[in-house]
Image 1 (cartoon, helix red, strand yellow):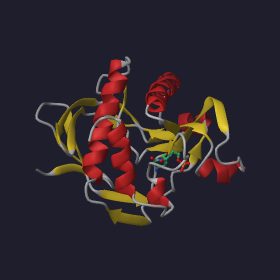
Image 2 (cartoon, helix red, strand yellow):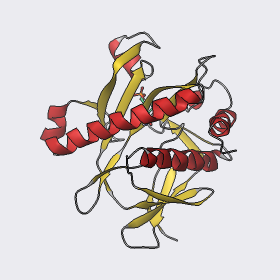
Image 3 (cartoon, protein in one colour):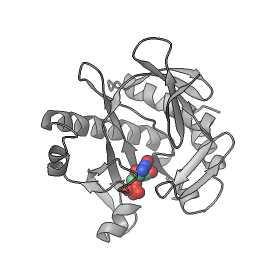
Image 4 (tube, protein in one colour):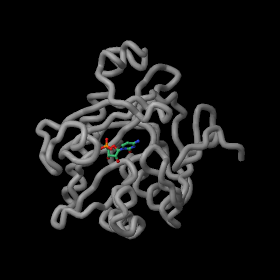
Length: 233
Ligand code: C5P
């Protein structure tokens, strides 16, 4: 099959029905705007299993997404959407870029959760955007942005409560949204330890891609531990 899009961690193929795509996970991890790259056997399978289960969880809580169903160990079927070039970050605690940007101590809680937008642009290094930038660049209308904010916060609430039951603290996450041909805004991309920051509730150790970013352990062991607590392995 010929890919319709070849990304850093996933490849997209045309789906079996009109307006569907197959999302296939790779075993690759990248960090720091793809400056750092490595391959981890089984990572793709784990991210796919975790994403499928989390999209199903959100759907069960009334939040639809581009996800339709799991197809294989490394792929799922999705509605084709036009991705809005925004990285929508929700933070429950400070870590990562916000600690450096604003000098907020690592681990400081945000109540209510903090929502940020970044421009999805590798050449520009995904810069932070405010709402006026989004409207000036024509990336979304006011109504679309309100819809995106509501869905992102609802997804955070559902995921945070779910992970808390698994003794995992959902620290922050990045969502992407897409638009269907009839203008519906749908949560898209993936939801996995590549895009969520997850800390063990007791030890505070990372169970996510920070292990690769900061070279602090074995990525696949941590992803498998998340999958194990989710009842997937
Ligand atoms: O690096 P930063 O602290 O801004 O990341 C916030 C959240 O967004 C983290 O969960 C991180 O894994 C995720 N993220 C992502 N892809 C990016 C940038 C951030 O999934 N390109």
